[in-house]
Length: 138
Image (tube, rainbow, N blue to C red):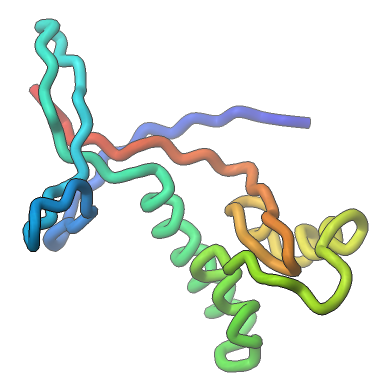
């Protein structure tokens, strides 16, 4: 069964935000996109991609699970990278992570089912979709 739940949130930056966009020589501009304002005018505004925000949420989820299960320094580097950073698509020595094996992994490690990751030579789709973070414009 699929459910769609939407949350709108107000985020406050506690430090500088650097989310690179266009490069002009050695200068990196903030990522910007055109936004239609209520008065009909288009304005280039800085945005943070949904993928970047999903990465922040993935790391928070991994930290919570690590604190609860106390597995610090007991995972292989590739397993830790899959949980914390989304993994890396690389050739796999053994069988691909599909079917019953994938279902077992998703059951044992809910983060795998929520956040997209790469593991066992396979891209594992996650169910969480995160939209862009836009500044409040008034």
